[in-house]
Image (cartoon, rainbow, N blue to C red; front, side):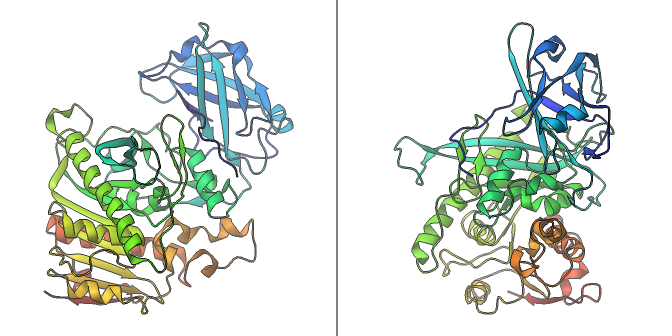
Length: 487
């Protein structure tokens, strides 16, 4: 793919096949595809759309189909607000190439009677296509998700040549939410184009992540009550998108944690900012230059500290946000995968607000002579014995440490890719687990195992809950060799 510098910006929400999730269309289906343009306080009045301008198209813009008839108006999602409904003939959508076997989303374009453009999109796929469904969260809370873009006025953007650039980060939140029976989950990537860019950068089919389905509802109300929830920051693997860790993020949120996942522009996965600006992964870590890697990690750690600053403002009683007074900042932890796991350790080294840290299979970078004074858990996949930084880290740890070596795992077993092999094989039947950075353990086992140890660690060290699982090897998880390092 040759991505544009800017991409489409939507100003409305679309619900394809209202009341259905995931949106699957059978090849033999006839009749119409119904879509609803949802009302929003921040958007235009969708009840004023001009039916003559309403079309559905594919992301490439190569096929377009007009709506059938004038449409209808009703509240489809139970929020007390009138939505606009339109129908599109399925045979015409197939003939125009808007719906194909590889379709993952459709784009909606229209204008109001006063000429204001309305743009929206939603997912829809062929029912016969293989998909990845993230495990349903097991906790007592529903899960909400939203995203923020924050710019740090005190830091230059060191990965561009423009002297006035300031460091901007994108942050995705998963949080305990109120249950909304008629609300549909958000797309796996909140901006699906971001998922297509990541897939292409990893040499996967661009539409791959459009076949991933999770459970969090975008902008859902915070869970009822006044409980304050512990806050966990998360950094992904180098060059990887935060959405690929939706499984553990959703599970932790359902158990009463707020998870703030940081996209690190130019060094993390591709990022699409709200104004449509596209930032690709352009800076690589070095296999030989430890100073360069430490410098990049310093930027990531700076991102983490800045995000925690912003969360403190967002959660302040006077903020007026849905999160006001609901974050517990005396119980903050950080975890990450790979380079993000090393960043979690560095954040714990350098910022006393972090009370616990966890590294999922990451080599440690940065100042290895500096001590860490908070509890820390390291997860190891198979084949990590050649990494000397892991033993060095524990030599400098001055609090309780845990080293969980999980047999049968590979480096990406700690992400949602653990359950993606059947989908990937629809495109490349010869692909094996090791080709994806996975081990021999079935993903259906890996995903809940990872989530269990994540929760046990943070429950013990942020909530003071008894967790016998961390006392040593467990018969429930014979794949895990757990070593406890006492200070």
